[in-house]
Length: 116
Image 1 (tube, rainbow, N blue to C red):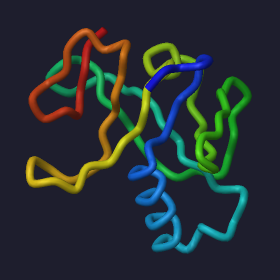
Image 2 (cartoon, rainbow, N blue to C red; image 1 turned 180 degrees about the vertical axis):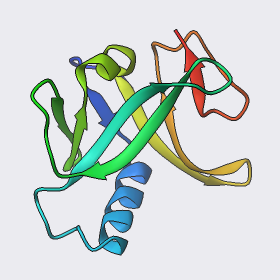
Image 3 (cartoon, one colour; image 1 turned 30 degrees about the horizontal axis):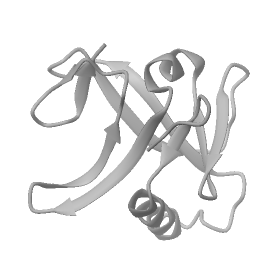
Image 4 (cartoon, one colour; image 1 turned 90 degrees about the horizontal axis):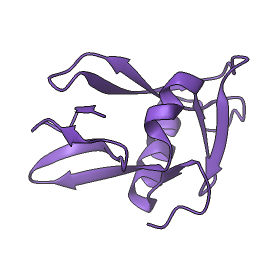
């Protein structure tokens, strides 16, 4: 992946899974809903990723769109997530969303936390 600008990106597999989860939650038809990504303190490496659906944009939020998926991130988290790609794996080594984060200096074995 070559970043053309400072953004947050979504892989094709992650897009499919996000759309399916929104459909399952009954919010797929509501354009007010989006994917909120963020970073919180914790995890074995110091910082953990956070994913959720939301419908309220806050004043300092950064708003992006990739492959038709609207992504919102608070400004502080975006400093850690700039040019990160959200991906999804359904392989034998673990199912779930994961982040391809070029800013992470190391990540833990479970892939759910990182350090910069």
